[in-house]
Length: 323
Ligand code: CP
Image (cartoon, rainbow, N blue to C red; front, side, top):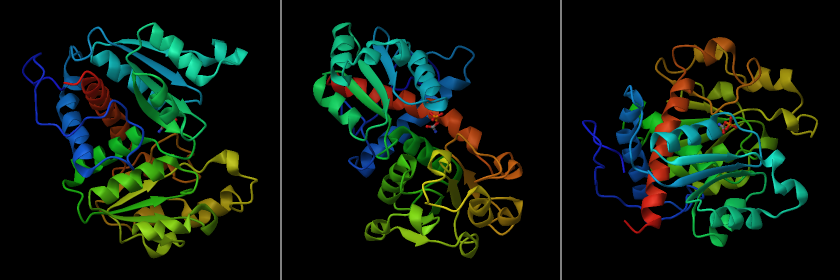
């Protein structure tokens, strides 16, 4: 639990959290989401201290298992665990026995036998973190699984929006880009709907699942028609690896219809929030000027990610210990 601003004693706020794992926002209640965000607010203060440490996870072992590349999420989890005084290990999968054919479950069981309390896993297969959570009694946190979910990205996005806008009920949030293949979009949509926001998605027809309408999500194919409607534009990375798959004509075409540049920013609400989970393709889905401009909160998202991950680490460990 977060330490008090004044000292080292863990606070004991009422919490609605009993899960040893965080696998997605789809299964969380509104109260559980708010619990994470409230805990993260407490933890954010620690990051402003000259000595950025709290004793919450002293003696615990956190291990990151990233089967896909990452800059932000992996570093953020490691820093979050270190700030909570955990012992942190980043497994180098290129130099691990996964290369010799060891299964994910065997890898995790062996690491558990060495005392790992919390696994943080990113995997190309949707459902891999859930499999792990059933296979070990450690806590498991999903750091992105296939096209399924990226729950801590969703939570840090919600945290940043709530910090800037207050209560998200009735706020209008658009996600722009490749919704079909985006785990960030899925986690954002579940979280935003549970907090009462109006959610829209914007992009080419080939990159938007029509079934979203049944969840109450608004679907737009023409960005220019909705620029003035939304309070937040969360711009997704156009996945360069999908170019050539016939899902959109090309980068220039995508930029022409869906790129957020100064011209489009000028037609948005003056205090609109521009968000992006990173990594950014500058000049494709977002221009330099908008990414670095006054409406952008992209680097604040990254900073908030550490506090949100501290909250998640503390909550799952606390639930696992039955506290
Ligand atoms: N937003 C995000 O998941 O970034 P990384 O891939 O760098 O972790």
